[in-house]
Image (cartoon, rainbow, N blue to C red; front, side, top):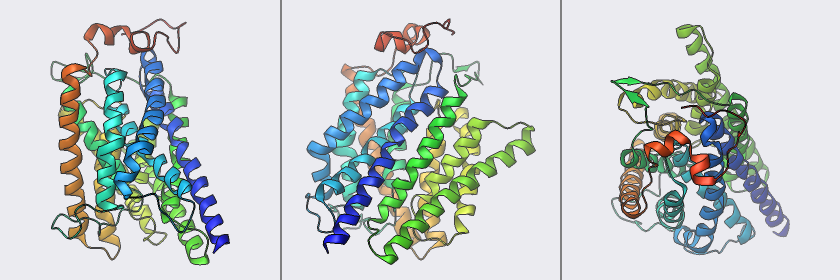
Length: 388
């Protein structure tokens, strides 16, 4: 008993550490995709999210999500830290999609609400104490191992709500055409994507919950293997499609294809054989490549492609569990719909309220100058001439 307790405690702490690698992962990915005049603001935002979201979850959110701190299988402190590692990711997904035109202070207020109330309620309904137990809307039976819906879709629904309130970047859409704003630092994008990829092994593998028996160890290893496979398939599929269509290989799209595959496999990596993730990841990449221009046609400005990666593949991954494993399709769809309705509506209302007294959107002049100077008083690349 004591040995398994110690092993599972160590496993949770190790998985938590891997997940925290996703903090610099998001930071580097976003810093590379935005213009140089906004890099410090992006880095500050990601630092703020980790600190504020974690503290709000510690003080309020964890108890709301799970009802208590009790845990018999491992240290309750390790169990908390593992769950705490997840919470900031919902806002990281959102912050990247509204970067280059969003102020830090109102986003900080929303981060508190997301980490203390919105995300914990979603967790309560799925993994936790279950406020809707026994009702028609009970979605506790949904299989979502590490959060294709609970985390990725929740953050992406909040992002969609924010974009509808904040609007696109200045100059992004002109005369019915999309102005391409290229990434500023491809090495940072690549570093960020691979840090996220590595973090996913703790994200999904740690969600198995135990590694102290032979069966549990096999399940963890299979889960991590399937996670990696889906990422590989997503990258390869994106590369093939890009070459066939354009005879060019866009590394940012290939990396987003990999991330799409990783999001898609997150719901059911513990249930599939070793071949199914190839199909799930490949379809995930195709969905990303279709969704990016689709959202642009709707004038939904998402600088990092977060909606295409996290929302579209959060939905696909949750449905894929029912298609390739013995899980009810209706239960999976009901889970998607309940979370979508709650996460989008609550986020939209909260963002509207905050926006009324602390506007999210930087002015056109502030966007032109860059949020590094306006929000942080320092620039990441002060020797560079600022560009419009």
